[in-house]
Amino acid sequence: MNAVRLVERYLFELYNDRQLQLVYEICGDPMVRHAAGSVTALNRDQQLARIEADLAAHEPEFSVVTLVGDDTHASLTWNAVRRATGEKLCGIEIFKADGGVITDVWNSDYFEGSWS
Image 1 (cartoon, one colour):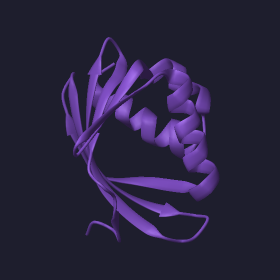
Image 2: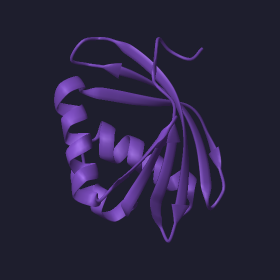
Image 3: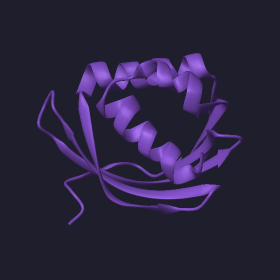
Image 4: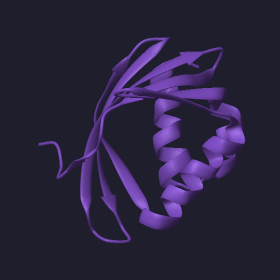
């Protein structure tokens, strides 16, 4: 499965459809999260807990602005609405896939509003 398809599943099935056990199928163990100035490696249980906490606190619903890539990398720009508060956020993330799972993700802070 290429990186673009994995990211689609991550966004729509795992997050939007709340198919949480999908973490064990599409996320690497570990999945490495890169942010400015930090790197965090999460095993699948930690990744699941991170997503569960986000879903419980914010109830995000994602939509894709752009999603492009190849077998190894995918670039995603997204919009989201936190259904719990109505807050609109947007962001950009780069994903790396290897062996049919997402192994790395690079992302900056999220921004209020939506990409136009």
